Length: 226
Image (cartoon, rainbow, N blue to C red; front, side, top):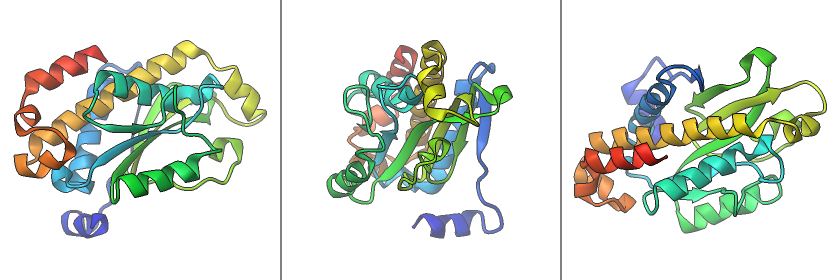
């Protein structure tokens, strides 16, 4: 279905990834708007249930970006989105395959949005990338793990190149927290925009009542709390 709509709507062009620094003015607005566009394009009418998967572990400061985003969304947006991967129940290399099986069994044909930390150049630290493609987790630490989702966010939290596990352990928590906040707010903002553009009957299966879908006041209140 996704490929069909892409071919119909963008026959000669694939959606492009978007990147900005978490400290950029309007970063949440820009990332959220692009995320909403991707949702509208790849999951028209929000027909498929959206599931957030925060990949990472709370045992490593740098690798806690995904679980922090999952926790922030779950606490600030209760009952609206299905979240796997939080500080209390992380999704990591050891259980990723099983969690993906669980999602498929409990939420068949769901639309998965993945979030993970990444390593990069010193000049790229703090950059958040939103890509309309599956996440390949474990690349930075040379692990072969299954692909996750159809849209993914990654945040560059430290330098790549050598001693990756040591680097992840020695990443500043304050940086990871601020980046997690930006990503969580962007997801909620983008979801808000996608819901607002969807028809009431189409969005209803997500568990959001029609009156909630079009209540900007309700979404704005939640958005401010993240």
